[in-house]
Length: 191
Image 1 (cartoon, helix red, strand yellow):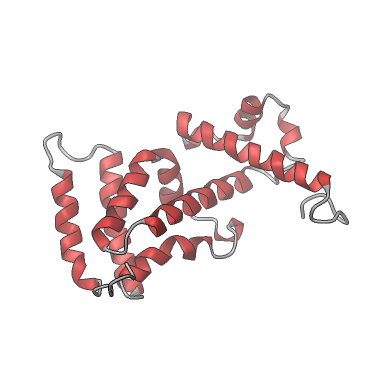
Image 2 (cartoon, rainbow, N blue to C red):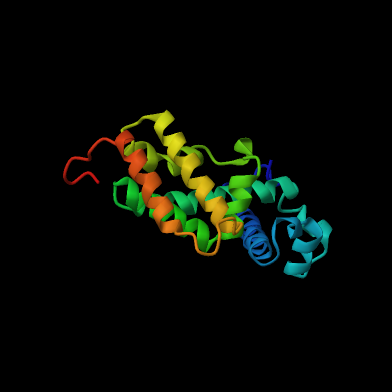
């Protein structure tokens, strides 16, 4: 699968390939953040890395693998941010919003494109969802409804769909207040 059959997992060639793949994903993320998702092509990636495009295929299967790696990276980072937020819904929603607004193109790429679940490492999506599931007491329907609300407001913010004088913070506060009934109180020390 990785083009190096028979080599031990810690063999230097295997580590070099993994390092090179990581460099490619880093470069793809830079292109994505600077130029948008349409610019993340194999040709553009090769230009960014100053190598010939065919050389990319020694390390990755193609654009689909790059896209899945970017989505995985986004889910891991967002999940880490959410896991570090305190256990109440308002703090969790604020962390989600801040991360999305700080990383608009990576967020959009992950949230607006089909998620390549087969290309993701096992458990990545579940780990990103865990903080929201925890705050809803394991209520999957409530977690999905809150996620849909948060995604919708973030999407409206990122596309400048609110009027210039709109109080977006008030919209967030109102929505989170409405959803708070889905979230059981957290015992002291568990938030």
